[in-house]
Image (cartoon, rainbow, N blue to C red; front, side):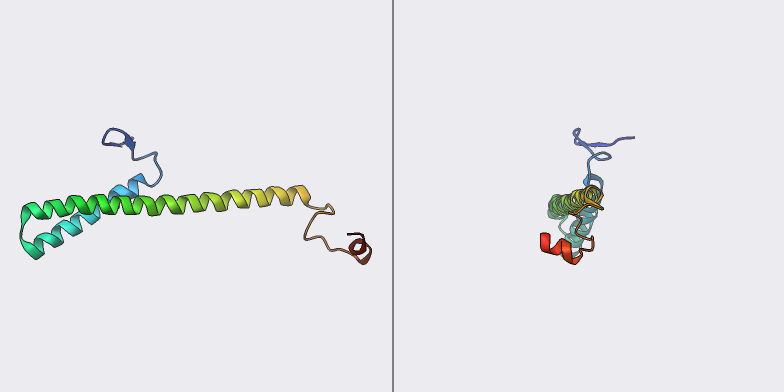
Amino acid sequence: QSFKLLGFLDVKNVPCARESVLYGSLGSLVMGLGHFLATSRVRRSCDVAVGGFICTMLGYWFYCRYNLAQQRIRQRMLQEGMKNRILYEGSYLDPEKEQTGSERSDS
């Protein structure tokens, strides 16, 4: 079943959304609790926790989306390479084909 955060962010179907929310909540807990233990100020600790959630969530969101984009680019390059290998395999354009002396003089 799908879970929508703030009514529009579908956490199940959007890449990196689930992990960002989980890491954001963990960052919120750590920062809020750490600030409370250091200062014993409840209201300020809640503010730090909210700020920690936003910063951690956005930080991991951008990190994850960047890595996802890099992975998609590498995957696209690999697919193109495989397509070209199938297309050129056995032809004179094949870079792995062993060239003889007469073929070298022609090119």
